[in-house]
Length: 289
Ligand code: FAD
View 1 (cartoon, helix red, strand yellow):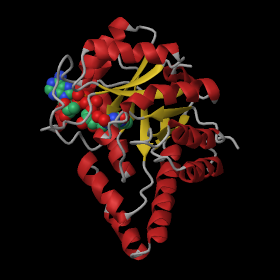
View 2 (cartoon, protein in one colour):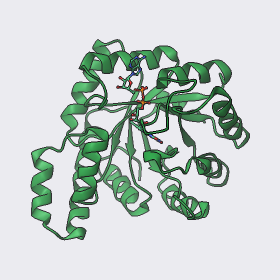
View 3 (cartoon, protein in one colour):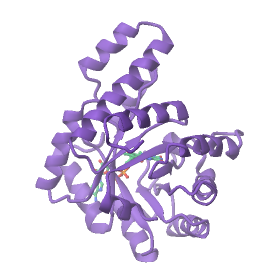
View 4 (cartoon, rainbow, N blue to C red):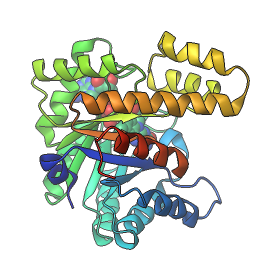
């Protein structure tokens, strides 16, 4: 089913998984998705070579398995830097053949050797997909604190408007640790004529090291309230991870109470984290038990 149709009639709940790196078998990711499927998410998204991991060949087969074998809607990510139109068309054919109708159209991070060929920006990819594969439902990324490369705040909204005009159906946000950033962003989108549904992305952090890496790669700021919890957790890895999931559940409950279009959990291939987030949303009435 198309994600735009789900967003049209309910507040959604979804998880993200990433394909295995290197020699790890695809079945490992499929096992993760199977466990997450017990919580009946509206969709499971499958990343595409995120962070230059080089695992993009696994995205379509895993998304196809989620759709076919688990009966859960799959959202296959796709980045376009370094790709030609023919590369994109071949990937989309593979998705469509395996029953996947939903694509998250992204530019991808800049990396040495990964230059633009046929696509400079995500909006170019969206326009191409809209033209050659009108049957696809197309999502796009958005950034409550602005994209790290955007020189001005206005430029950030201008590029979201371009994604909307190119044919995106909805937006999924980058992770953020202060919900006020998301609420401000949502309001400003409307002022900048960006009217697409916005799914809020929340990542339960698992360690100090990981949250620091996220802050640098995604440009997400770490509020003092998060730092305080991590200071309290001290050097204990289990206490740091517990602080992360507890904080994420608070974020999710607050977002649920503030009328979001959807909630997406960056569950990092950890079904236990996904399940805890699910239970927090059942408890507050966002999800049915
Ligand atoms: P764009 O929309 O092209 O934006 C990139 C920059 O260019 C921004 O600063 C924007 O303001 C600017 N820009 C856009 N259009 C124009 C224009 N017409 N003129 C001038 N400037 C413009 N990466 C992966 O590698 N794999 C994944 O699976 C993946 N999944 C993601 C999922 C989500 C929900 C999010 C939020 C990000 C994901 N990323 C992933 C990271 C993403 O690839 C990076 O954030 C990337 O740097 C930008 O992607 P974009 O699609 O937002 O690019």
